[in-house]
Length: 129
Length: 207
Image 1 (cartoon, rainbow over the protein chains, first blue to last red):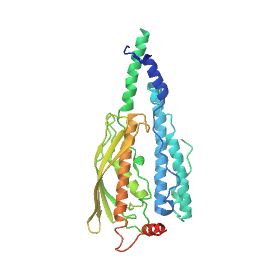
Image 2 (spheres, chains in turn blue, green):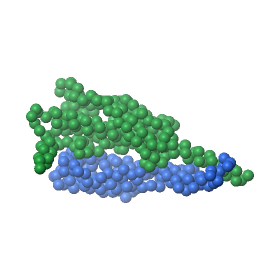
Image 3 (cartoon, rainbow over the protein chains, first blue to last red):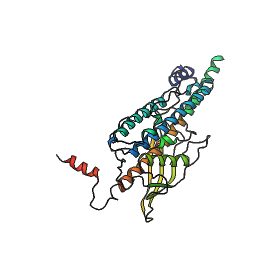
Image 4 (tube, each protein chain N blue to C red):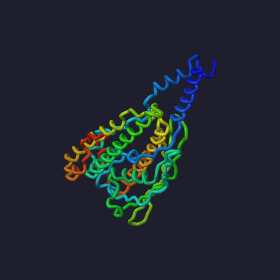
C-alpha cells in the first residue's frame, strides 16, 4: 500500500468525501432559552424588567453576529468554503428570546408592573436581519 | 503525474482541515453568553436581604485575547457578565454605591487546552462580599468550575474554545450566585424566622 492510499482507497477520494460531509461546518449549536420557566410566578417587577432588558441586548448582539457571519462567509466562500457558517443557530436563539420577552410582558401585565412595558422595544422581532 | 499532484494537494488540505478543527485560537468571549440566567435555586423575592443590595466594587484579572493565540476572557466582559447576572437576579443595586454589600471578584485563572476534540476550560474566581455597614466579610470563597464544549457544539476549534471559555465563566458566576443566595438569603433573616419558600416546602411535604 502506498502512502497515497488508505485501505485501497485513494487519499484524494477520502478527503473529497470528508469535505462533502463537513462542508459548511462553521458556526455553533443553538442554545435557545426556554419560554416558560418554573419560577416565573416568583419573579418581581424588577426581575422582569431586567430580564427583558438583558434579552433585548442579547437579541441585538445576535443580530450583530449574523451580520459578521455574513461578511465572513463572503470571504470564506473564496478561501475556505469548508468552514462556511450556514446554520441558523442565531436566528433560533433570537426567536426563543423574542418568545421569552413576550412571556415576560404577559407576566408584567399580570403582576401590574407598569414600567416594564416601556422597556421592551425588542419584544417584537426586528425584520432587518 | 497529474494524479500525484492532485493527491498531494488533497493531503495538505486534509492536514489543514484537521488542524483548524482541533486547534483553538483566538476569539474573544461574548459578554451576553456569560450571563447566568435565573434558576429555581437562585430566584429571590423582594423581602430578601440581598434584594438589590449588592454593589460591584472591583473586578480584576481578566485577560485580553491575542488574535494569533488562544481565546481569553477580557476583564470588561467578565465584569459586565457578572453585573448583568446580578442585575437579572435583582441582586445588583442601582445606582451603584448605595448597596449594603460590596463585591470584589478576581478572575484568578482560566485553565484551557490548546488542542483537543472536547475542550474543557476551568475558571477559577475568588469572590469577596463585604457588609458595608460594618466592614465584615460575609462571603469569601474561591470557586473552581469546569465547562466542556463538545465537538458537536462547534466544529471549529476556535469557536469551541470560545464556547468553553464562556461556559466556564457562566457556570462559575452561577455557582457564586447559588452559594450567595444559599448563604445569605435565609441566614440573614432574624433568628427564628422562616422564609416563605421553607414554609411552603414543609406544608407540601406533609401527606
